[in-house]
Length: 91
Image (cartoon, rainbow, N blue to C red; front, side, top):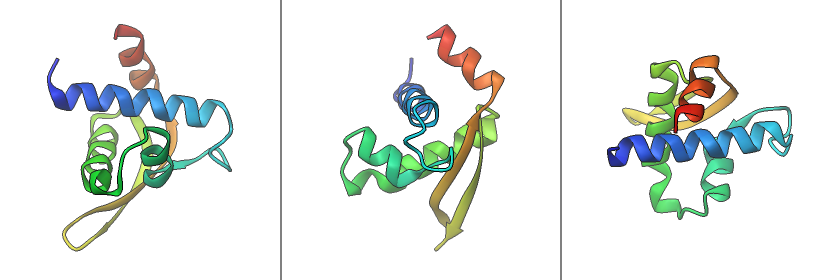
């Protein structure tokens, strides 16, 4: 498993936890919430937002990226798709 795959799985698991527990407010989770739950520093925000955007592109999660300065600034996730759930089960 590559480092990128490993990060994607960690992010998926964190999103699953946030969305399931309702601690994501209105059943949504954003980059800041994932960053905090994963206990990552602010210096990892860009990498995390890009990873979350890639998970949207792969079809593992549904969400909306916020772009600016030619990069993904934030991502708001509404749910993990069936494909994403299957990917978690395979890990």
